[in-house]
Length: 248
Figure 1: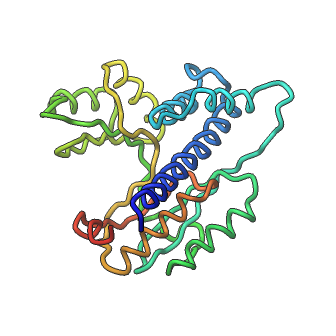
Figure 2 (figure 1 turned 30 degrees about the vertical axis):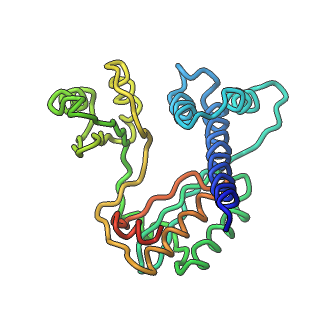
């Protein structure tokens, strides 16, 4: 294949992935603004959604358009419903799919199809959620030993965090969902910034995925990511760096 065609194909996929992220975050901003008002300082959910949008360089016009659409006089009303689907991937791994949708039937059919086409199946509510804990997660990058480990842990715990996981390249600050915004605001005042921040479902234990199973799971995640209704996916499998390199 000529190099320019390969580059064009990769660029097209990258552009599409970024556009998908914009669509998902615009929907999240719309919902947060509609539910809690257009002032980010008085609406923590909106503030977090805007921060996530800016982190991926979403144009300010897109952000403002979503807020105006949600709160402007005479704006067309769209009722988005949050639904958490649960199911099993290849090998019986646990997967949870968080959606924001204005059409429950369409989304349910799409999620069911994504599971079944890649060796999994959609389950009933509660079938895998017991394997996860809902936690606030703040990921702080770490370079050359900074921020200082002892100071970071002290600041996080003083702010109300439940725990801090120390990695070579990052800190993972864990909170109760209800404490997430307060802990985030307290750390922001101390000039900490976050690679990721949000309330997520974290697996209590993980299982290794290899070979054909790993390939199918990655393709399943890619398919969910391509679906505008899907806001996030939580799972309990891990794939080694060597396996990721093998799969390309």
